[in-house]
Image: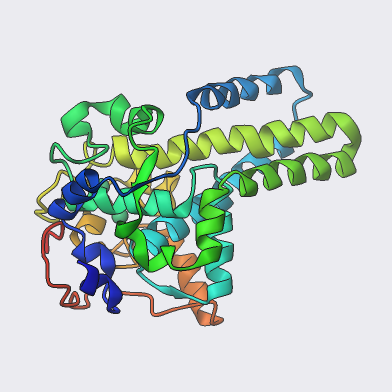
Length: 310
Ligand SMILES: [Zn+2]
Ligand SMILES: [Zn+2]
């Protein structure tokens, strides 16, 4: 495990069920957060403040815009970059991607990615942290996050990124990006139209958008192992789903993803819309990202096979 991660291999390929079990027993789990469950519900309730503010469609537009900007951070950042290393970034853009991802208020990149690697190594087995097949819809959707059981993470499973001090910092201080965005939204609204606009911008552009982005992301855990078709006979129950792909900028092609998790591209056919991949492709044209991995590539010799249904 150690040797594999130190090499330039895709580390998630080498995370196996045994590694996950060993991490749990080693006592080396890192306390990431003990974020109370209460703010989660308060933030949902704050969305209702919109009912008491003057309505205009441009507030809806603001919410949708920041939903998709941050969904890109979730899929291109937390998922395809930090969890799977499916393409490469410069160290500066790597940090900016972490900042963007965390602005969605889904905790630190190291926390997110290490747990996601566990998901792939144990998909739909009793050890899977959010399998709807094992524990039902609500547990997979949000229960596993709110339970507090997974507030910790094993740094060994994410050593390839934990070696960067700036990523350890931003992962530990994961509230900095969302708070900065909230403040910027409030200030921007104030400049646009005074105090009422400031509150509207905060509620629509930050709170409603954040809650929508949470649940959009969570559908991949709760629904994409249940709802949709299966192109590949993977060892899990992952599915491909057009609706989920639109909501999540391409993550709905989850069966494709479980089949070739190292691939940047998840929509394999022309009609399998994968906005995250298209945007990353554009970034690669101007040199902002490179080495985007295609599903047709042979997987690297990572040594251990478990977790890959190739
Ligand atoms: Zn999955
Ligand atoms: Zn994944």
